Length: 446
Figure 1 (cartoon, one colour):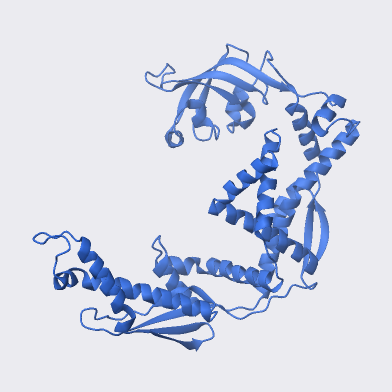
Figure 2 (tube, one colour; figure 1 turned 90 degrees about the horizontal axis):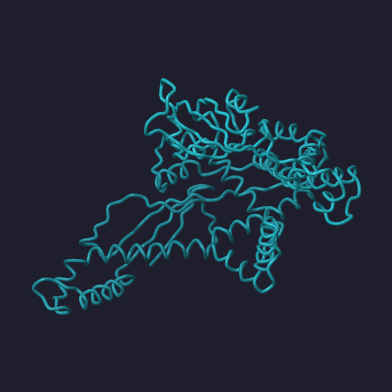
């Protein structure tokens, strides 16, 4: 077998693979012989089918399979050993193959090559690092939420818009009577998630035993299908009036802002006053927003480097490759419409891989295992459970990492941490304090 690569230009090449009979005939013969041993063909005893008959039946298909296997192995070996940086996969150049008569074959492939480029990570790159601060409105919300978490449930006489109500939905007909065979279901209703303001207003001020007529459709609430015990698709077309009878009203009364609440939230005597309590919550909330600030910075870096890095792609080849290999059957028109976004994504992938390689960023197996353990401990803590003992923790982590998708996700998370640290070191960052609302506005501008 002979394989040669011919350069067309900096981004495209042609691969020629020459296959002779000596490359495949032994393997083809072996497959045919093995098939003959086990083949059950009417008129012949097993293993006694004439070789000529077997070759006539399966010879061509075996030849095609074995030659294709040889081609794939040869192409992979050539790319690997010669460190050819390809984009996509080589595409065969269409030509007729005389499988019936020929013994030597020549196959040609077109290849798209990765471009040569430089990535500049230096202080000329300037970015705002948005530090989200918890303003009074946000802080009040979190303090109240924490007080409710340790509060107690009460049963008030009349409902308010933050209450939870248990009641019975009964579907009505056009005349306002109970619809025979209609929906009838008892469910809980959180008033603060009702999207229909008119319905929410109608549910406020009610007492146990009261009844109210409600129009329920897809705009009533995101959970309306659960309230009615129907499928979400059914809710899409449902427009009906319901009688809602109040069975029970529940209200979470927030705990008092006292030492008992402070100790339950942060541990005994960690904070000793409402002022310290609010300061501690502010600190915790702002710490939780750091990852969002990092994500915003990463997005800004991506846009900056894609724009700044001079790079060309083998566009014609890639468009053809996308049409040829996509399992969803993309058309030429669809590829043309979506190609700009695809090319930006590919450019970023190439840029990020180059950054990782040039700066020797590495994620080791022990890093992945340690991070998996941290995530497991965090999940246990989220549900108020103690962390497993070391041996059990390692067993769970190994089990999690046995899932290829989970393992890949953790690798990506750790590479994100390393690249983010690099960006913060190499670029010029200016801290800019913003409220969360300001952050959302800035983050959605690009």
